[in-house]
Image (tube, rainbow, N blue to C red; front, side, top):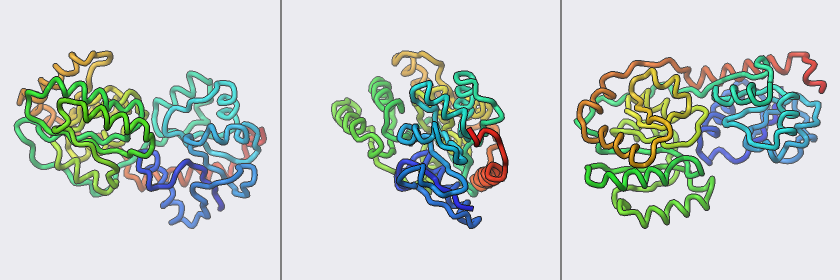
Length: 326
């Protein structure tokens, strides 16, 4: 079977979506699927039996997607943003895979997309993930792994922790500076003006195979994103036994059951967030509750996710559905 996979960038640009794509890509190759990844050129010219289009390039291919009779699977790692009329046309013509339940609900509630046309396939976790074995009395080594793009909350983290400079802590932030270089430059400038610049260390891309090591070495993970359909780093932190303090995003209803994630109430101002985090950083019992009270949650391994995607596209290629005829 020949598959063309249209996406935005090469795999070197690490993010949750690219990691997901990479697991899919490697699994399909192992199954001898003739796949062209990061396909360039016209979608109309594709001779593949199936076309996969990453939501990140939906705008680029919106007109052919609205008219093509080819078999297409749309892969959404985030809620798609586009003019409503053409997006509805695209969504109604093709099958859809979403990696977060929030995206599925959005498509169903906003565009009345049939639930049977949407396949929810959430990210997995790596096999052999090493767990944290020891915890300090209070968290001192703080970690944030979040790409440098709008909505990830980096500026808010600096604002919040500027009011916590009387406590003992160090924060390391890792992310991809190339996805939104203007944002990254603004963040670096803001960081240099911050009174806590010597205690907050901004780093570039961390290879995914090193994330487990960073999680085990840290005492607390921070996630201040405004929106996540599924927070892979939260899932990975849970499986590494690392406590998390987070805004309520990214499959919170699943992760909340772990008991190791401290979700901030919604609509808190900076002062309220500072007070919540101060309590966690200074009260032994609060941190101890997170380190000792967590409950395992069940998430699939990446191999299982990739296998499910593989079986899905096999079924879609073999299916004779009227929707493909437009």
